[in-house]
Length: 78
Image (cartoon, rainbow, N blue to C red; front, top):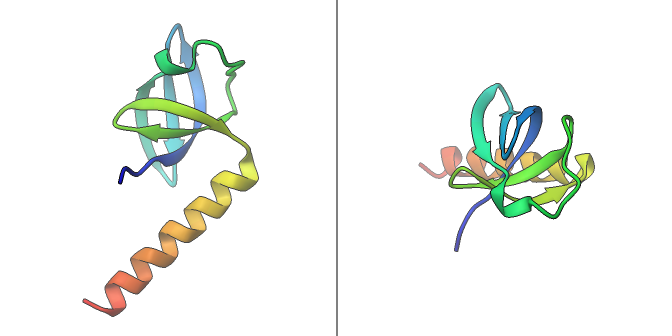
């Protein structure tokens, strides 16, 4: 199983993008999304430094909520 984290693009330079999620910033590769219409403000699923899928804002928010719930549950059972 792999995990991809939703992040929002803040800046694009060629096949590289600067992205942010919940205060965490990362530079990611857009190489795998060459055929997609990607622009600043878009949301992507990021896996090991690569954008792997473009998603909408609602999908990103839902995923962040689920990840937050998992963290809370993990802390309760630790």
